[in-house]
Length: 134
Image 1 (cartoon, rainbow, N blue to C red):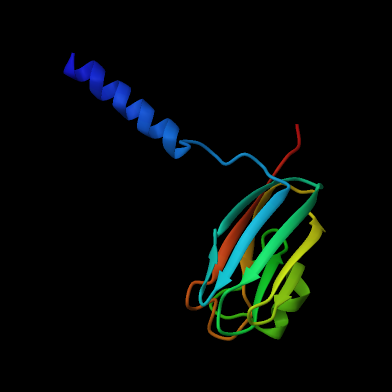
Image 2: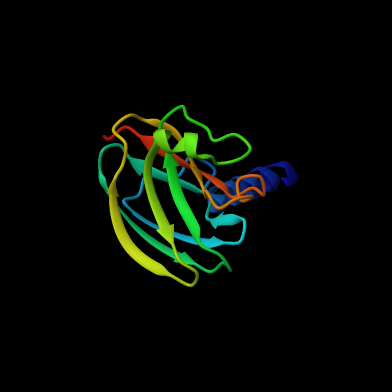
């Protein structure tokens, strides 16, 4: 009986936590703070128009930059990385916006970064997961 209760409790916890991959969304919300995106991972359907609600709660200008598929910034964003940007949003201190962009058509994991000096090194990175449409 204890074993059955344990299995039931474990299944309940896993289902409450989501247990699997996030379902794709076309409406995203992100808060940019000093050194992080909250949340830092987003799942979207390929080729769809995405609405992004972004708020900068940090003390400096922040960016929400989606890199091209297979492109990673490394330890610091430089001018050379500009050629590998898929989409970019700049947010002033205390700024907020509702904007749209078209998700990449190729499924995969795209790096999201802030180009403010020192922010990639401090961990202000995220991931845009693009999944094929159904």
